[in-house]
Length: 76
Image 1 (cartoon, rainbow, N blue to C red):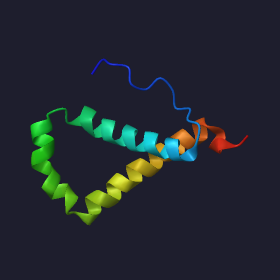
Image 2 (cartoon, one colour):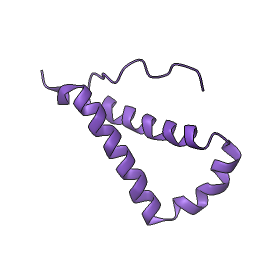
Image 3 (cartoon, rainbow, N blue to C red):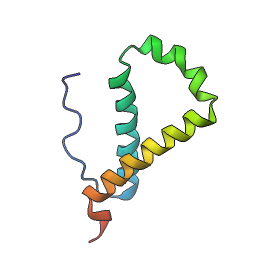
Image 4 (tube, helix red, strand yellow):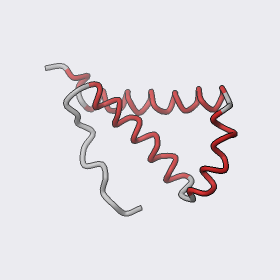
C-alpha cells in the first residue's frame, strides 16, 4: 500500500482523535493481512472471542494514547 492516507496525527477534537485511532487500528490489520478473503474467513473466529475483542480494544486504546499525546491532549 503506497497511498498516503495519514498526513498528520493532529485532530481538532478528541472525538476525531478516537476515530483516527480506530482507523489506525483497522489499517494495521489490513497491512498485516492484506487478503480480504482471508480476513472475512477469519472474522467469525475473532468476532466471538472475548480475548480477541479485548486485544482489539487494547490496540485502539494504545493508538488513542498516541493520537492524544500528539495533540497535547487537546489542551489550549
